[in-house]
Image 1 (cartoon, rainbow, N blue to C red):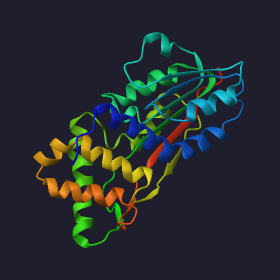
Image 2: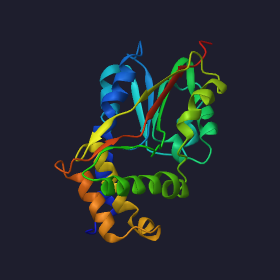
Image 3: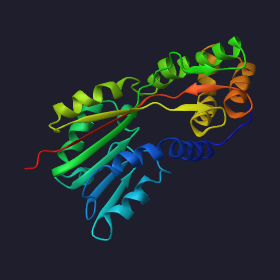
Image 4: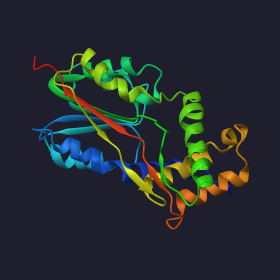
Length: 247
């Protein structure tokens, strides 16, 4: 597996995330009323087209503030500051997601809406088709190591998304709604290519966990080659939203 710079990996990851998730995220936001003139806060990985889409929707009277991670400067989360806050793939990566969600809810003005989107890292039965049972088992092994050992060891909470709905209600949001987007990715699709990026980003940890260089190269070929025949069920993306009280 050839050496790729960290910066290049992050750019690729941002591109693939945007391609895999933006359509669903924009559809969720498009269902919200009265975005014109709204002050918005957009949080999460860079590279997404969502902030540009939001700027078009809020118009010259509105504002879109972007940030890529936590901790956030106190001024960014000033109480009652925003009419819309969107956070994608952020809360699952912080030590206390319920606490951050409460801070985000408190930064909404009356009737403002919070939308949080995070993956439930669910590796079970993720391979829908593969060239052989051996290949299927190898991909599943990599998925399980990433989802259950490596990413949690780096501070990612694989099950936070399934707690987001109750956490949003506990934070005082009303009429909380959760939709779950479960994509299917063929080899070479942006979602499958995200796994190829993770194979490089976490190569040392995967090798330490017992995979061989040849096995990693095989998985990389399976997820990147459109002709490999691999088909994956992507991680469910939980999109939880709700408005603050109107007073």
